[in-house]
Amino acid sequence: MELKLNNIYQKVADNLKEMIQEDWREIYLYAEVGEGSQTTYFFYYPKGSDEPIYSHDIPELFEVSEQSYLVLLDKQLECFRELLDVFIENKQEIWTSLTLHLDHDGKFEIDYGYEDILTVDPYEQQVIWEYKYLGIISEDEYDKKIIKKFLS
Image (cartoon, rainbow, N blue to C red; front, side, top):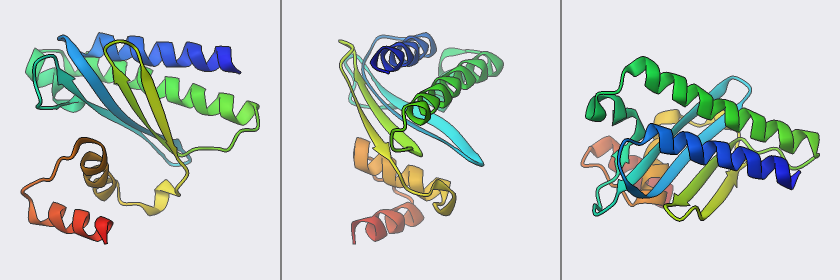
């Protein structure tokens, strides 16, 4: 199992390196894979910057075709489906979401989530995730209400 996991983690890291068009110091990635729901996105910090870049902005920022970006994104989702399959095959607790933190030296941490993702609003989930992992608080009043509710 460990060898399979390491191979998948390496594929995820390689795919991220292919997607990011500049030197970076760390990446925070969210993924969910489950019945009726799958998504992934990430933020990365370019070297020398404290401003995170949202993954879905890459095509516009770096003149990458939307099609090429979506192919890489789908490749990333395939890695996470494969990861979930390894958990199932080895009778491990089934996760529904994960957060991966990767630094430029290759060190990484993964937090697995086990919540019922079909009962969570995807927009609210992302606002909370951005706050929890990146410290981002939007100026939007609705987003502030989401965070306030999360903290109470």
